[in-house]
Length: 286
Ligand code: MG
Image 1 (cartoon, protein in one colour):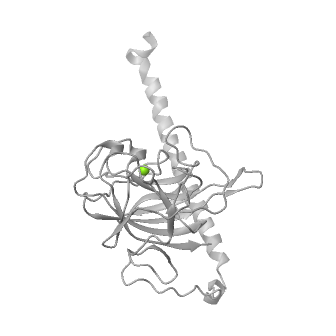
Image 2 (cartoon, rainbow, N blue to C red; image 1 turned 120 degrees about the horizontal axis):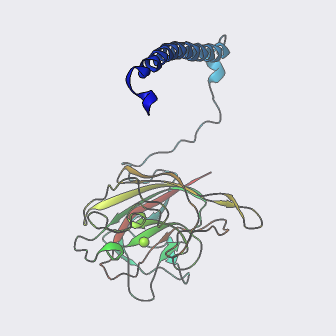
Image 3 (cartoon, protein in one colour; image 1 turned 180 degrees about the vertical axis):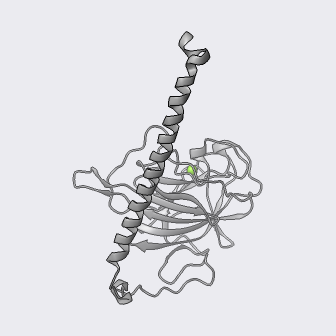
């Protein structure tokens, strides 16, 4: 303790002073070295372009296919498969039985029928990778709370009956607390949305989704995982999220081999008023 007190500290200060000076010089040398390295790397990469012509980095073929966009960004472009245009459910079947879908079509709108025995509906067509547009509306008179308030869902791939598959959650999340990986915009129980851009009950909301399907090896093991990018009301809620498997109510997600799958809409068993959908279209992607 004594060595730290009184005059005995002076030599220590002297050594510290020299050390500081030395450190300052060393930092300068290091800084100069770093700047030199970066300058050299910059010069080297610039030299790679020396003598190149603009034409050498132009790509001319294949020419992207011409697609006529819809009259609005919500309307289907010319290469879209329209899954619901307000008229009928010709593109859909009962997900449980494969029989005709019996949800309610009225005034150009599709409404979930929650009666016992009806259940989820899914597309007749099957898909791999795609871009999907879906609009949905929580009724203005919605009641309930948490998961029992306007619960539905868009299954990006329906891999079996009931809720088998990969669910992008639909729920009234305007002012309704629940677990965050179960609110609207969540990949159910896998990933919460980045933000909450929900509109009030009674207002139409829009999902624009890009789905990259998982691929599998012959033996059923995973070859490449699924990815999803999704916008809710024009706001990014899932940014190329890598799924960890099928979405599950209970337990840890896992992958199950499939090739092509329908898109499924959920008739959730909660007691709240049924929600509606409109303007559903999809564009298949390579
Ligand atoms: Mg749901």
